[in-house]
Image 1 (cartoon, one colour):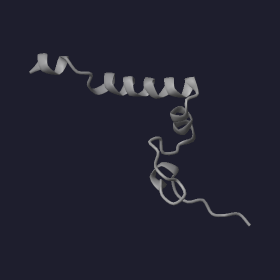
Image 2 (cartoon, one colour):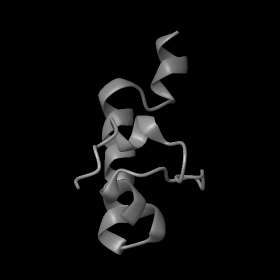
Image 3 (spheres, helix red, strand yellow):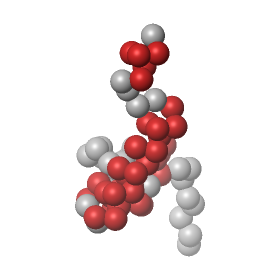
Length: 63
């Protein structure tokens, strides 16, 4: 069992790998990196009406 698990990146190693790949995108200044930096959806979803999870709670309009 350990041999099978040792072939894959798991737990902290996997988290570190994902974080570093996102940081690399942001450092390169790619479109995906900018979306991560702004906290918007990365994979092409519409943002006019949806994406509340990624954007957070609605902010009231200041008059």
